[in-house]
Image 1 (spheres, rainbow, N blue to C red):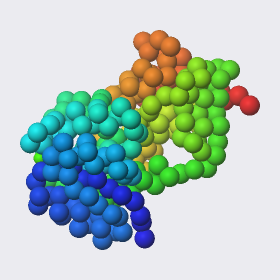
Image 2 (image 1 turned 120 degrees about the vertical axis):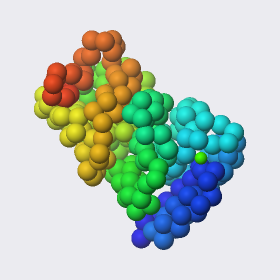
Image 3 (image 1 turned 90 degrees about the vertical axis):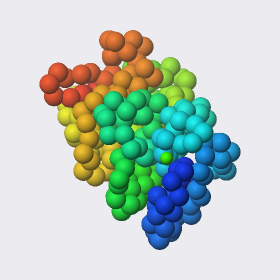
Amino acid sequence: MTTGRILIVEDEMQIAETVRLYLEREGFSVMVACTGTDALGAIKDGFDLIILDLMLPDMRGQDICAAVREFSDIPIIMLTARSSEEDRISGLGIGADDYVVKPFSPRELVARVKAHLRRTKKTERKELSFHHGDLFIDTASREVRKGGRVLALTNTEYRILLCLAEHPDIVFSRQQLINSVQGMDFEGFDRVVDAHVKNLRQKIEDTPQQPAYIKTVYGVGYKFLGRPQK
Ligand code: CA
């Protein structure tokens, strides 16, 4: 039986209740917020994951996402009726971990929820230090430090970084990166990975335009430069 507290932020009650039913059947405890204001009030109660509709009556989902990211790295899965690649990319750019396009299969959404929570809870301890401690990853606390300062990474950014950093010099295609971070086959766009990598570079690189850690291998994907030190 799975456990975890999920917040659904969705004003279409039929969708919200269907998703609630599926999640509760899996053992999750679920709360539904119908407006952005309710959601922001509820989020402080401590949830394990947020399912966030982008189109709400009072606020944009993107603004809620950005507000949550001010204080939390909780996994956020966006629900979007929009199918344009641009909209999805902009959602990931403001810190969501994943998205599902409406109409969606509740089963698939539940599978995504489980995958994200599984990844969050993985606690095998490993400490990776690069460039004399300039970049430091502690997998037990899920903490990444740059120059001694703790970075706020989304779960997806963290997983992409860990996947690359655990395999220095190995080139990963964008599809491989998506699969490794989602834990399942994922119909992704290459630009989704590019958007995550761009965010990551802003956080871990001294000069994001000339990355010292995550190198683009043109026409193939990405690889991590640098070897972990003891
Ligand atoms: Ca809506």
